[in-house]
Amino acid sequence: MQEHVGIIVGGGPAPGINGVVSAATIEAVNSGKRVFGVSGGFRALLEGKKEALLPLTIQDVSRIHNKGGSILRTSRDGVELSDQDISLMVRNLEEMGIRYLITIGGDGTLFVAQWIEKVGRGRVSVVHTPKTIDNDIPLPGGISTFGFQTARHVGVALVTNIMEDARTMGRWYFITTMGRHTGHLALGIGQASGATITLIPEEFEGKSLSLKKVADILLGAIIKRLSMGRDHGVAIVAEGIIEGLDLEELGKCEMIERDDVTGKIRLSEIQLARVLKHMVKQALEELGIRMTIVSMNIGYELRAADPIPYDVEYARSLGYGAIKYLLKGGSGATITVYEGHIRAVPFVEMLDNAGRVRIRRVDITSELYEVARKYMIRLEREDFEGERLERLCTFLRMRPQEFKERFASVLS
Image (cartoon, rainbow, N blue to C red; front, top):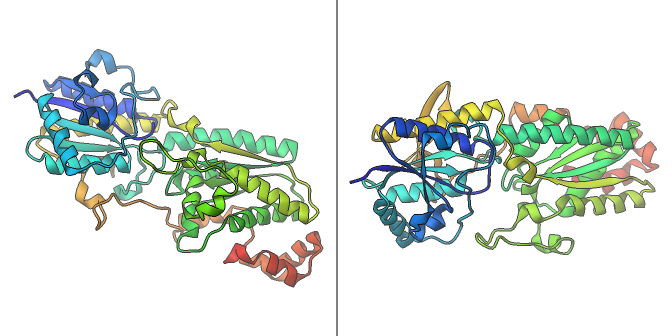
């Protein structure tokens, strides 16, 4: 029986994909195995498209490790899969001669990978390499998923330029960043660039959240800056905040689209920053303040960037580690790097009680988040008393009680 290596990519792009493909291919070929990339994701595998199998050689991959994008492309295959579908995928893998499968992707790809491994145990060995700029896969030791560091690096460069424009023009920017469930990317960009304020979904978990509350937090940040004599700033807003909003309320302000394949809301298509801009501008005008606010989205610019050295090295380690683990008889694990060693984390350690991949969220009780919060300019509890309250009331020509009532939602 032929025992080839297959590599499949799922989900959105992330810097470093080609590094995993390159390292895995080189190590597999040097170990006497043939390697095939599966172009078209799990859908092509389900349909048994043998033309989707792309033979990979060392010559094909030896100089792609520092390039963005994916030579195998990638696809979102969020269709409702069944046990029968997975069994068919396993059978197709066997017919293709693929004994070892490396999956590259985020939590959705990881979920399908562990499913294939469970159904095909003993026939197909599977390992996963964690790719997502959202950084929301629960890897040990807090290490990031590959692609995150590059996405943050590129995002910081963009926001740094925007901050200078804000200062030069005397205006505010509201910038939405990618991050479906979590605020890792938004917070990473905001903290490293020195953005005025960063809002992430974790700070609203378990709380009632409305568009007005989010708008009031941004409004408060602008007023606080103005009271300090500064007429400019940049606010970073994680798109994952949308998941906590009332979609009916949001739908009155913005058209909501769903992905044709997965059925999930296309968060990156919702112009949250634009919606908030209009709400905050109206609130400012009601207070007699004129302010230019520009809304932007950052996300697609980050996903296919050339990886920075960190992700080049990291991805190569993952690809190498994936092959070494598989050829030693391993299966059913995610490959990561922990305390200077390549480590295989069993799939079961990454699943919740319902069998879904656990989401790693920003710990807002940690000192690291405390540091990020300390360097933001936004209304805090201390601003509702004493000299701070007096300064804000003087600027707005409001009575203290009136100010407290107007911005009560900020603290709720």
